[in-house]
Amino acid sequence: MRISKSVALIGALIAATSMFVEAAPLKVVKVSGSTILSAIPIFCNSTRPCTTVDTVAQFSWQTGGPIAPSASLLSRTVTFIRPLKPTLKRTVYFYRLVALGGSSTECVTKVVMDFGPVTQIDYDHSGTLSDVVVVVVKNAPPPIAGVTSADQVGNTITINFSPGICKTLFDSSYFFGLAADTLPQAVKVQAIVYGGLGTNPISVDARVPMH
Image (cartoon, rainbow, N blue to C red; front, side, top):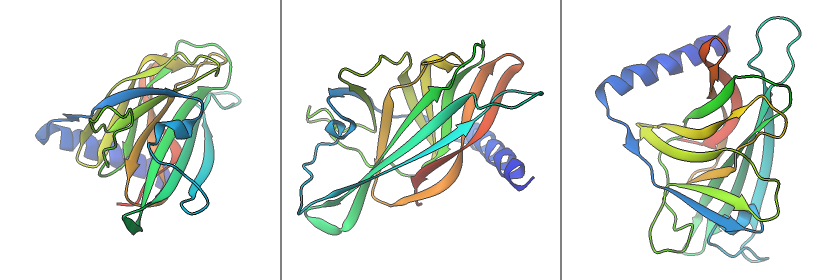
């Protein structure tokens, strides 16, 4: 009951805020590499280590009958210490949505999270700072969903996918990431499922920056 009320309150606040504040588009850039860490323009070694933590949350958009997980959301945080500011721990927050099987016309088309301020990084070494990075890992099974756009209203960030991540085995998104200068906290985010009976926000466990 408490979680349901929290999700409803977040949805109401997002709707109310959107009436008065125009969404600001975030700059999205795509990079390729052999690993996820290749998207972070830093060098990790014994004197400047990176700390990587993964958590996975399964969720379902089924209604009625036995409830089986429909998909999972991976939160991967990579934290490192900035050389010129050792007290400041920068963290890049990566996410990936993966369908767990079955067949359905229902698809996750966006993720909405109370993320807070985004730290821009020159992910692709172009000399231009970006907000969101999409990572295409070499030799990995091809996902179907890339991030088409992202926007922010206050602390709320919406990530949009096309095509959506549907309830079909092996459907997934690319890893996408955002950075912040604060450490992670566990929260609920919303996976927006479209299809079937309409649009349905699903509460999912994830990790975002403290703010």
